[in-house]
Figure (cartoon, helix red, strand yellow):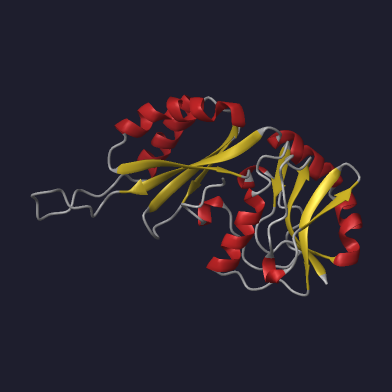
Length: 232
């Protein structure tokens, strides 16, 4: 048996109730270890990652987004059942530091979506190709400048799909409306690319992997992989 890890939290939300079932149909259980709570399910083995298991994992993590501080795990993080206290003790400094960083905050991911190939009404030809990497970087820098937040991550998305790049921001909950209003002028003036904020999410992009290689090894997913599934 092993713990499939969803999140470590500093104080569960007051109205939190465990979801009906977690990965593999197992119960979702909060386990208090000293001053922290580990939300996990005891299962024999981690099922393969697929759209259903990834979505279920993300939905369970989203139930603790309103905790005082949430350290989310990507899909597949698992620890042998008897080793959880020792595992947490080994990673205590990293966990404590991460919770301090994300306390009171959520993640907002701003997707930069390619618009090439869209057909302009009345024209037989598609619009010109969208911006290249230099222009995307400049757009991301403009978003960062307008956002005025110290914690952010830029991630090019390669050539697959219409997501050209993404910028993740660590945003204080109280500043969500302000954040969106500050980046709105950049979004409205972008050409050849749609600027699409998504979230709020648990802060996947701003927490450490916590020794991921020794864990289960199945593929991971976070908000960048599940566009359109904001936390509620």
